[in-house]
Figure 1 (cartoon, rainbow, N blue to C red):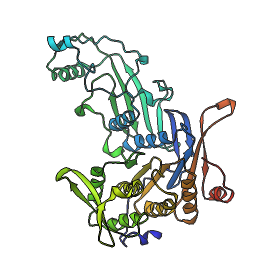
Figure 2 (figure 1 turned 180 degrees about the vertical axis):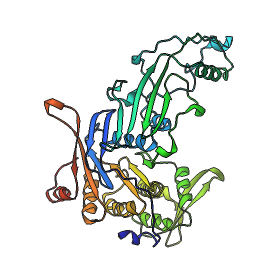
Figure 3 (figure 1 turned 45 degrees about the horizontal axis):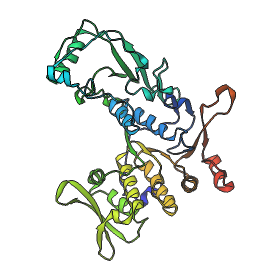
Figure 4 (figure 1 turned 90 degrees about the vertical axis):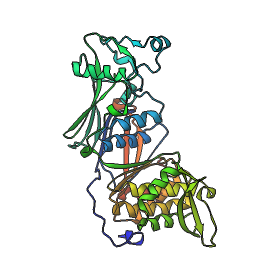
Length: 404
């Protein structure tokens, strides 16, 4: 394998994480999306609002086992509704003055009141259909259902009251209550996310660790240097340091070293500096967005080992001349680190460079996934996917087929 050029001779053994297919139902803009064949590396293309980023978000939920932290992250990134820390967003002045809050547990919540995380369901409303994410006919599919419950136990009611008293409020409840939840299942594991109770980190509904898969998500916006510094700390004094520096040489071949240091003598603020062959040292950011993007991608790649590597707009900040050698590094390391890669793009240069590397690297499967919408009357508007694998990828570069 080509990985010997980038890594030492130590054999890396990991658990199986690759998905051979993908089924997404009732999630965001997808009533039904089926991808019958995936590769180890998958580049997703399509028009604006076709659902490219939604595929990455579905995979985040699947990998997390449906943890509420990921529900929150996805919702916050789109300015959508989440569970609020305060039961009534802001206590009104009278409640604050009287320090008494009347809670009516008999309220019959209407499904049309727009609950937290409701936007994740197809049509932006809870419905009878479950969100389903996983391999086609797989046993470990993630299932998310909205359940409207008319009553809860006294223990649950008392927990809710106790939570409100933390705000120094006296509560006068009635005898019954309504509890609305999302029921999340993955394989033999199940948990519930309350939609009617205020949020706190102590009651955040996270999945069982055994239902989770490691993943890293690289967004279109750049991560902070503090975050990248923490990722760098994980590879300090390992062979992967050399891989990172070799990757940065795609931008400037004279780079010899990289270090993260404290900035302005503040431990909480870090920055990356590089050293060139002539001995000069300066901040990496002074070399532009391209080199920061390369650093971000390669550091996150290592942290995604034994899991999924999800990249939104792979080509963001990258000149076309850098993309092919960077894809070569990712193709070679994906097998070594036991990673399945999913990336999105609008760029023809990115498509072409990915295709060329996929065809040259016979040992690692690469697939180009084009998402579109059906024009047939029976399923008009529904998402459809065209899969280009090794047998069909060559037609893209040979005939310059437009797939974006």
